[in-house]
Length: 549
Ligand code: AMP
Image 1: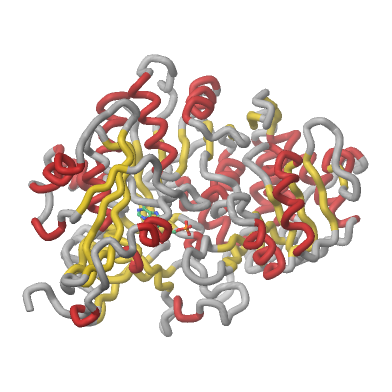
Image 2: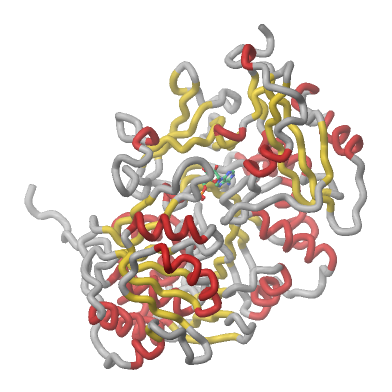
């Protein structure tokens, strides 16, 4: 049909042009490695991004080439975020918490052409460099000195003349890529298009999502190498929100200082970060003025209800729970209360806030059990499948992980969920973390959430341990808060009125720390290994049987 709307591509260049034109003076604040504060503005940031793009072109970077980063969250990393996709190349953020061999595998798999690395991460890069084929190494240094054989980021920018801006990039071209954390099998590449990043940025801003506006100041604790800092650098540029970046200093006190000093309004990260912050606030309730902070978004792992309540009831702070994955950009579901649920009693409202929530607009969900799609009744469990314009349609190298995509075009998440009548999703487990006792599933996430509601518990991880009678039984590893005491029997008793008897972990083991993954989530594979032989050999004859049979 004739007379349609303009076919203007959805391209990150539009975000960057808008940032310079409409909010050139808005602040971008970063903490350097030496703890000093660096301040710049969108105007300056985009001017430098344009120069960086020119310098990269001079080095031979062409459309579609992968440009890697190995860097903390700071203003230079943001310049790269804006420069690389908007000039037609592909931003590939490497996860600095991975083993050097894994970083090398990922850089080679993606065929990265250039790397931009923080000087403070040079010792790590030196272990990776001999294993990779990279054409140019650019170092971001605060002291003006870079290792020999490398290029100085600041000198490259200084050599370019001012002027110019980013042209549109066709929307279905690759803009960025991240690799899955790959706790099982090799990491797999996820490629974001300009279109997917733009639509996702708009999705994040919505009132029923992150509720962002120009007046906001955003501190992403989530690293820029973890799913594009959840898309925050793009949505902030689009809206003109101030940005605050913590650099390498992610300890509770450093974060709290920045949140207070910069009057941050929204921050986002994984639960382990907020558990630490809550403990710090509990021990020094009046030390930090967080009166500007309206939302702390928590995702990447289940947010315990006790933690969410603790922030609200003791400190007046609101935690918003969201679910997502590298493959989902990441916004999949988010738990905002509907007008209907807001009418219900307090306990029910809290239970809803602690769920993973309802799918974002443009994201569709369904879940599949052993006998097909499950009903949305809040109890049936099945594997969550999703589809939408910012959900991966395949992995980079289409043969990788082909089984994750259904024939009718949905992505199989590997998360086992129930969905209730209102469309709220509850993640019961990663499929591989579920405890299958006597043929019935036990949700480790539910047990962990309850344990972390105990006043003495700082962190809890529940794992399946092979068992000679029941095939598997749950075991809880618990870290106590500093100075708190609780014995294992008391903690088991605490769970008794909350769960059926057969859900109660056979043991609660007090440990000094729970191993964490590169994204700061509990590393259950390490715990499973540690406790593998605790209850004898598994009983394979029970697999697939229901508990009642
Ligand atoms: P990643 O791709 O590394 O971000 O990991 C994605 C996985 O993290 C998901 O498949 C879930 O298993 C888990 N995850 C993310 N958000 C949540 C959440 N809010 N609650 C429980 N698990 C989550």
